[in-house]
Image: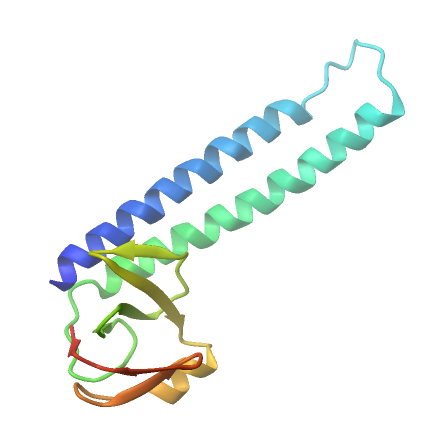
Length: 146
């Protein structure tokens, strides 16, 4: 089960990465001004904005790439407790512990990525199947840990 979920997460992260890279490329193209053309001050201002946005997109792409690498490094691990790399199933939610993830739906359930730095991770670490956990204001029961 975990391998299947990890594959679906990775597919969505790869799609996000491709979108970020395409957007970044469009910004790079927009920021390249023909130096022989006459330009107005607004053109140079827009160029600076495009370069700033491109740098932010590259940073986001780097973070998504690091998440994919982290995901692959922990894909084969199995867990009986909440720990980095654990995939936890509740009635309506999947929780993947170790990295933040964008909102997604997997097999009809909401997926939440919980970073190791998040206070929620510290509160849930070490919990087992059958234990109750709090996610925001929701009280959830751990049905399975993979």
